[in-house]
Amino acid sequence: MSANAVTADETPTSVSTRPVVRFLQGANLLGQTPFIAGNTLVEHAEDAGVRIPTNCTSGTCGTCMVTLIYGDVPLPDILPPGLDDYLVEECARLGCIGVPTGDVDVDIRPPL
Image 1: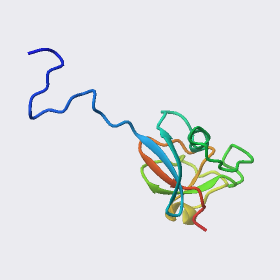
Image 2 (image 1 turned 135 degrees about the vertical axis):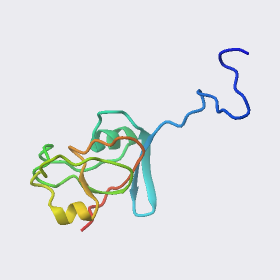
Image 3 (image 1 turned 90 degrees about the horizontal axis):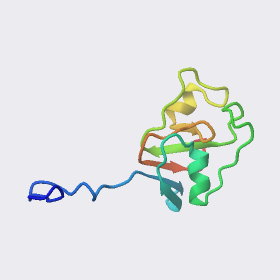
Image 4 (image 1 turned 90 degrees about the vertical axis):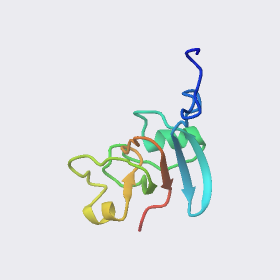
């Protein structure tokens, strides 16, 4: 059997799904782009042709606040001034400092 042969119980390694970052506004898909480890939500949005407004780019102002619908965008240990516990409970993330870890769906509107 060759190294690339696949049995009936296996899936080919070349048929893997690459994580995607999707940007929505309500139910409307605005754009999507392949996940790139280490890139922020704003960087992914730019790659997808979606504009998320920014100002400070450090998590201080909250201009880039979005709503996490699906996936994981870890929060810093100490919340930046642009977020508080209530907003985090409402799934708010800051696009300028939020770095997804894989498949993510984001509503570009804040949870307010």
